[in-house]
Image (cartoon, rainbow, N blue to C red):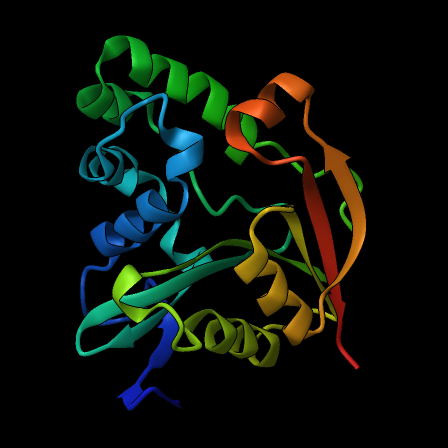
Length: 204
């Protein structure tokens, strides 16, 4: 696939001939900074702390010049795309913050979906490496998922209403909002996000 003069190869993260775990985690650290700032303001520490958690057979990556340009997970809504290990978190974040991350983020990342619809894929952890932003990476990965997974529909459970680039991308891909969850006022003032939106795409 061509974009901006670069050729992206999209594949399952566990099938590529290179170790992608740390690069995936660096993209995660970059994209989730506003949520993870309590644990560390240093993106390198965040990347090292969370590199262990990615379940690679649930992730797709775009590769360009032996670099991970972007990543996205797609699950069946029952299988987790990440699995946290408190020992690893404590090693990088310290005992207290590592323990807190293990408790709070496990609740966030490993909470089972309630009444998840059948024959539906859950799109999760969409991220693009800083050097490849604006080159259509996320769009290519999601198109690849649409074409290579058996689901009739896809959902993205939580997108911040302030994440305008993501919302534009998902709208362009054909996703439509079907639910919104207002954040508590105190949290909203702290991170500037008013609502978390849920989006759905139906194959035609």
